Image (cartoon, rainbow, N blue to C red; front, side, top):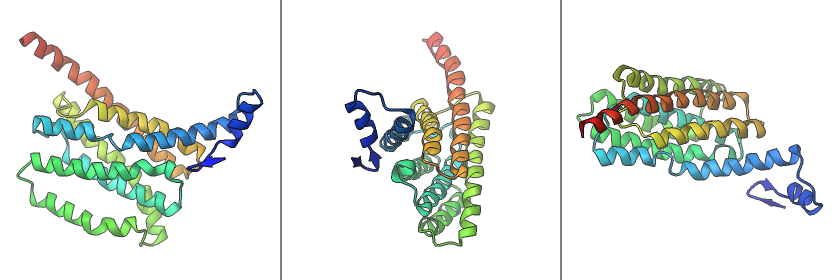
Length: 235
């Protein structure tokens, strides 16, 4: 019995005989279910961040280059997973994250006007190259090298934002909910990636995501608390 690539026969067979499914049966099932749960949750993960910017009509404290690099990283990661033929449950959230990340960058551009010529050049260059990468129409060795660099891209996408938070002792308009979901999603993906026997390079990417997302989440907790107390005293 299989639905959406999830094999239920093993677990149901054990339950029919009054037995709890063993580890080898249960872990793959949990991995698949968590994978689809992450895909479902990813459809709204960046929505709180987008709505917070729209509500305050400000992109204060947000590092533009960080979010631009995030779009590039999601594009490469999605293209690689498509090229490797991984099951949708193992990477499906990347599609929805990419779409939301593009919308988020557009919103940041709007509230960061005037946008510099260099920024527009970066955006146009992405629009020109992204379709080719997503279609996998590049040399296989170059594709592997590109994916290997994707880990560095995600790392450097977080560093400017982490440093800006540290320098300003503030996280500006960063959304706690979005950051929390990013961290939780990375944690779950480490587990599902191991269970899906995905390439180690994929696992490394999610491990980096856990570390960097936890850092940003911690900064939001640390830097927003003093600000909230200050505003309370002023009232």
